[in-house]
Length: 351
Image (cartoon, rainbow, N blue to C red; front, side, top):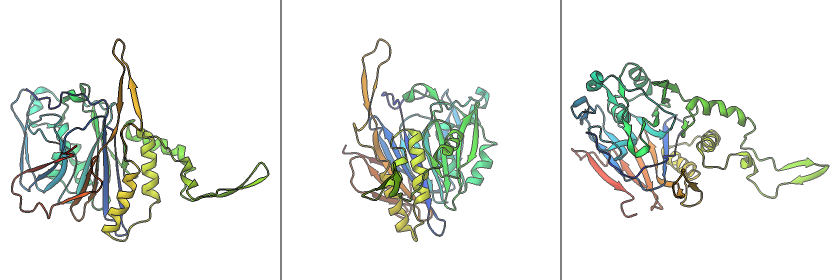
């Protein structure tokens, strides 16, 4: 009964999610989405009191909830859980923000079929959370007592719930939700950074391998009884991982968000965030992955940044830049205030 929206399999959905705060501790959330092809994406707006009706695997009416907040998001058509627009990135008018990132090791147990009617499809966890909560503390408490079912995502290799989820709120709260031993587990996220696999606790443990990182240039030293001097600035980041793997991006994300000074206002914060996200922008064919399964023809794929988003959670603004764009386009709750029905606008429409 469920519709496979895209017939092309996506072997990877890398992305980087991170956040910074200004001097008043207001939070700003940046996100990139990388793919090997343009997964059609839409700027998506849901007005307050929008009714969401999920459906069960056999097509019957499932969980039903109404939004307490306006929602501004980026959605894709990956899986029909009652709504073909699946939110991958978004925020609400209460100051909660969301990002879904790929993690192949995720394996959420499905609920019993007799519980489908009241279970939230995990593909809709962002939509559900943004419609109901304004703080990560509220969300955390509710996740622990809510039933989630685990659809098979055909476009991602027929695996169940191949994602983990980052949430932020405008006061600086940050959590990651992952499927562990078949159940959703909530982790506090002191780094405010999330990429892809391995699991989030692994990334935190791996930080112990980078105690040498510093943003202070060491431009002079004595080596082999020779006094040496670096002729330029910028040597501090020589030890920073340069690869675009999820492990390298996580370390870079923590380094940049830790090192930048706290901006004094929202405009400077969004500008600072844009500069950070530039460090995660990927160009086509800079890295090419050649794969060949037994008996199959070798194929080459390149991942590139399909879109980048910057979100100001206090002011309710989202800036979005597609691969074909040089500049960001601003969307906001204020600009959407006259829309009484859900609204969808294609990103990369001319690509």
